[in-house]
Length: 221
Image (cartoon, rainbow, N blue to C red; front, side):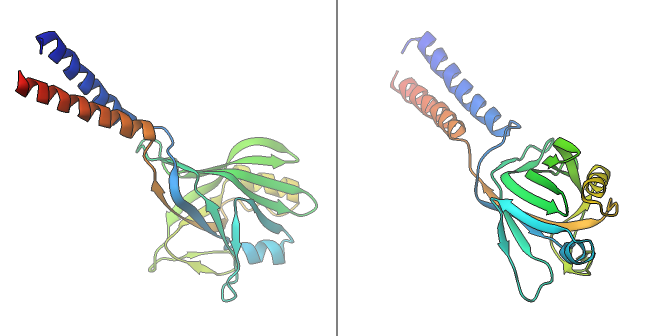
C-alpha cells in the first residue's frame, strides 16, 4: 500500500471517530425510550375546592387517580432530552395542562430546564400567547424533608415546582384568583432512557472500520 493511501485512510478514520465523539457530546436533543415525568398535583385540592379552578391535563397526559391520595398523578411523555451539562433540558412535546374558571389558561409543551431550575411552557391565555417560565424548581424532596402541597399532601423524591411571578400574576389576572406566586403547585419526577442518535453510532463505526482496514493493510505490506 502506498504511503499516501495509508495517510488518507488514517485521516478518514480519525475524522470519523472525532466527528462521532463530537456529535455525542454536542448540545442537541436526543430521543428517549419509555420516558415519562410524573406530576403529583399537590395543590389540586386547594385549586379545585377553595378557588374553583378546574385542573385538566391533556395531550399526551395520562391521569391516574389513587383513592388513598388527595391529589391525582399525571404522567407526561418525555419526548427528548439534552444532556449537555451546560444546558440540561427535558422536553415534553404534546403535553397540556388547562386551568379554568370563567376563562382558561392553557400550558403546553413543558420544557424542564435543569440548568436554570425553571420549567417553560407555551402559554395560551386571554392576556398572553407565547412561551414563558411558569414554574421554578425550588428543591428536591426526600424522606427526611418531604415536599408539602397547599392541601398538606407530602410527596418524596421529586422536584418541587413553584409558580413564577410571571405565571402567578397571569393566573390571578385571567382566572380572577389570588396571586399564587411562589406557591408549590406540583412535585415532578422524571425518568427516561436516552436513545443514541443513529448518525453518531454510524460515524463511530465507520471510523473504527477504517482504522481496522488501515491496520490490516499495514500488516500485509
